[in-house]
Amino acid sequence: MPRMQSDTWWRDAVVYEVYLRSFADSDGDGTGDLGGLRRRLPHLADLGVDALWITPWYPSPMADGGYDVADYCDIDPRFGTLADADALLAEAHDLGLRVIIDPVANHTSERHPWFRAALAAGPGSVERSRYFFRDGRAGGVEPPNDWISAFGGPAWSRVREADGSPGQWYLHLFAPEQPDLDWDHPGVREDFDAVLRFWFDRGIDGIRVDAAPAMAKVTGLPDAGHGPGALFESRTWVGNPHWDVEEVHDILRRWRRIGDSYEGGRLFVTEAVVNGPERLSRYVRPDEMHTSFNFDYLTSPWDARALRAVIDASLAALEPVGAPATWVLSSHDETRHATRFGRAHTGGAFGGAALPASPTDLVLGIRRARAAALLTLALPGSAYLYQGEELGLPEVEDLPDEALQDPTWERSGRTVRGRDGCRVPLPWDGDRPPFGFTDGEAAWLPQPPEWATRTVAVQLADPASTLSLYRTALQLRRSLPDMHGTSLTWCATPDDVLAFDRGPEFRCVVNFSAGRLDLAGQGRLLVASESCAGGLPPDAAAWLLRGAVDVG
Ligand code: NOJ
Image 1: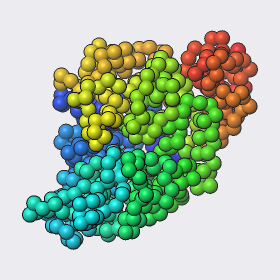
Image 2: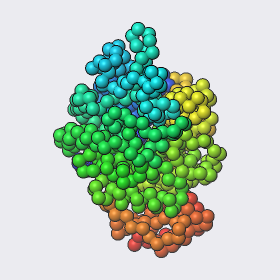
Image 3: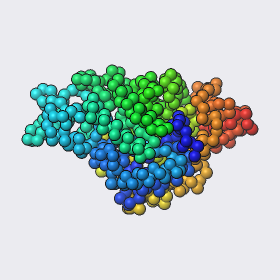
Image 4: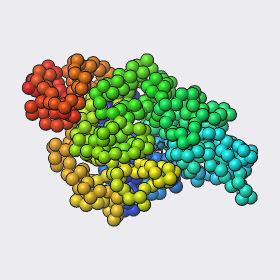
């Protein structure tokens, strides 16, 4: 496999996010697992992606879907065993797929032995110094500072000491079950060096760095100036003491050195929701991470000018550091874009479950989602797909309250429903739930019966399906030489059309206008998100080969 042999594969890779709990179940318990993923690997190879990012698979109480890790060097029994992980890796590699994992180093689970030991050891102990334990203000009854949690409420919880008395507070920028580690503690750094080596030695190809901007805090933990009811809007923060602090980069450089010590190197991709492309570019300087998710693109409204501005700003900010862009439309944290794009306000807010749901026109949303796929896959750099977007899956907005598991739901006093609606297990085949996801009775989140028309099996049989569109586009992307370059040249167009060339032959056109767009004279049509008879329709995109036989 030529792509498996390249050391720079990540520069234009298409990476598929596997949200493991919801991908495929092999043991009938209704939760996705490694056996299910292994069985369905051919779907991913046939789809034409280059790599998988697998969300946390470690032993976890699942207070935050596995982003609360109790042991970084094992597999949760619900997902399988280390032997299953090794087998998965070997099979993925045989199919030409690389594997990226998600170790979550800003915080552990409250069930991690380090935190249990810290609780037991008491104030002032060496064990507590791995985390941020502090005395409260106002005689101990108020949190030590004004920092807030990404899931709502204060970022501090108070513990009961061994004698039962109310004691110190500990920091958690996410849920209380996710205490933040103090990365100034040398033992924390050394233990994570070993975690990286544990997985790299097994052959893992890369690491997603969860919540990277959180990993360093300003010494002394000063107030951030968050007012009452402040929201965790890290994209607007400047000089915040618990986010995007300079010392984060020391940790990232240390990790890069470890990855680079392996033959061919190992990939790092950061999750860094920071204030604009320039701040983001600092995470991908030559001795830091290779790539970083582009949340400005993910949250852009479906609007030609806005998207062009994000694309230009992203490319301009990355150019000086020599890093490729990454383009991403959805993830396990964001309302699915097929639903977002059918709303009156099409932009997202990361962790954007915080947005109040508003009515969506799903026919329009899916049309735009198909066009957005062609736009995204045509841009220079790497792209991340979220499982199910290749099926055009919408957000499930009517999950019953009792099914909700995202901590946001309870932390917000049951006002923000959270991210479960984008995590509903995939429909593989059959005409009723659980749609081949599990041999058991039901998936861990209920699947809508109307997904019978969206299963993989149904879409494979339909050349006009969203799955067929993705497969065609990914196959073209791999085979067209122009798509492996870094250039992008905008064509002169009206404001409500985006068109750009890549190399001498490839052109992508996206029509945001209300009328059909004549493509005559632009080249041979390679693929389009809608039928182009009579011109490119509104909310549609096309790929063309210029200089070839005319489409018109
Ligand atoms: C980002 C992950 O994608 C999200 O799912 C998780 O809740 C937070 N980081 C905390 O780990």
